[in-house]
Image (cartoon, rainbow, N blue to C red; front, side, top):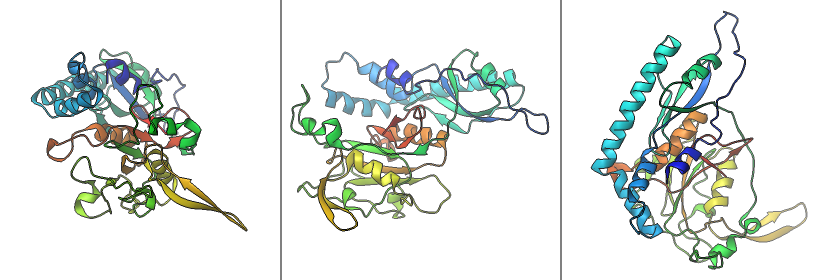
Length: 324
């Protein structure tokens, strides 16, 4: 991840200019704003230090994971913390009150989520060290097309240019959506094509570490940041749908009509990849999930996920998320 890529994680974070809404008490109403800071996040910093070393893509990914939990990585996080503290001090003076971040991002993105009025957001955007400010957006669940529509089969059989044939083996995909159905055959350890998943991280994440959720060698982590009490189990269906599009097993199923059932062979884009499901509560929390998805795992052993997908639509994905 280079600096341009990390800045793309805050895509469209141009300053939002609006007329400040005023409440009945005459005080400007506040909303949550994502404040992107100028320094690259840890993942981009680690990748930049390895650029030009002549490593293969897989070796570079492995090296970046190691760099994230190195002494240099730890020192860089302290540098980001200090710089963020300076910006928050300046921002507090600029708006005339103490600002406490709702969320802090250091790994996949570098920034904070703050409660600000529109006028305060404009003033914060002018401060040194601030790259951009954007008001949060509430996005709603939508859907997407399947692997056949995008030609995933050419990647599976090695016909996608210079890329070796792959179905996602060894890749962990984090999905930020409405949760996941851990008992669905799309997320079972063994797929219908005879492939049996292995856990590339060697341990589980989130609720699965304490047996509060059901995981296996394919579905290696579940997080729940809501107050629904579902323990990350998908109560809507959309999160499972999105996770299935990304990395659902190859299975035989049928489309049930009124008078007939149409047999179908279905598969995710990367059916041999591993899944990790997240159920967030709001957009700053969603970016936090993406940020923690890049962060080192328990004991600093490995990255949680490779790509982090955001399964809600209605416009630009939250900064730091790749919209599915």
